[in-house]
Image (cartoon, rainbow over all chains, first blue to last red; front, top):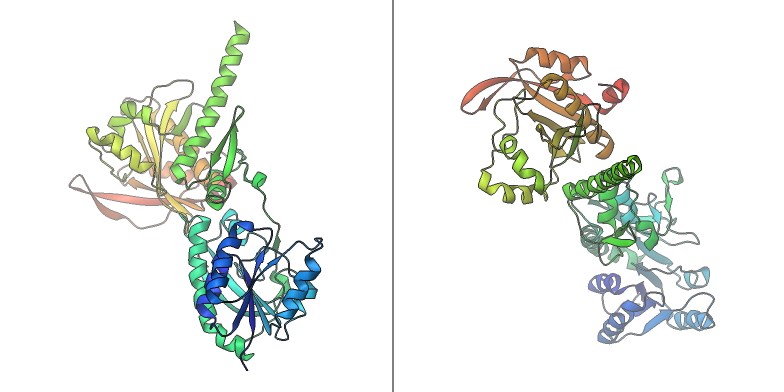
Length: 275
Length: 176
């Protein structure tokens, strides 16, 4: 009997899954209501594969129970999640008899939680990775199936790392999918003593503190380039957004130009007071 | 970045006329410079390239409160993965208190390297004939890391001493 796999993800995540999972195994796609920008493309992918697209509403929404019923009616054996932004609750996780598997953009148990690539850059890491793991009631805590290491170069933005991570995910899925579908894959518990968790980042977290080191500011900028909202600062009342990669010498120049400007203003105030 | 008598600021386009000689022809200095000789008519192009290069940062040295450029200094060969860089300073020959300015510039540049870039180690290369300078740097926390090395500078073979200072050695000293 063919294993029935239900895939959760944004368009990029689902494309990766659909490239690796045999068509006869993929029975449906789930997209997140809170990321409407991906739904049109997900709909096209579902239509091309001749499978249904289901949209997960917010948990408090009156439509949530319908969503659970829709997932149940698809009778998935296995759920596979890649690049998805909503929590899967026990009422969904308990449906597939072969459990639910997530792909996380970090080397678990480190960098559990949201925005792992951004946090790795902000922490000046030189390596990150991807992890395929079983899902349980908490975020990113389930048993590990497989991992791949991904280097971070000094000139990388988060987009470069994501691109490299996607290639690693593709290779990991190709290697692991046969074992996953056969139920013969590895299953290693995470080492809780090495775990850390990061919170979701918000646009206002991109504000540059010029008291921080140049390196920290450089990392903040490359962690938030387009299509993220960018790092920013205020020049008098004007908001200056840095949403493209800036080489280190240019970050140094901006920081010290601001300092010189502040010193000049102090000097001219002092001079005005004297006269 | 301000010291007692000097300030160092990132090299700007408008600094090029004043810094051109130091950039184009640093001459024989205390150090084996990364002799980045630039033709004057190509300074603009050279400057544009420096703005894209994460491995090298240039600064102008000025007396505090004055606009006149008396030297340039540079962190080059910045290896962010290894956490290291090379230090280079070139002061105009006419500068009085040359030795004092040399060490103050080095202090400001090391401050930048360790605090702003979180580097772990900075190297300098000194021509062996300047033994007094080498001794002074060692008194300030630098250590000899290599045996002598012969390098060719302007067609001449010169004996060079390589020194380094680690972040912890630098922090332990607090003053320079």
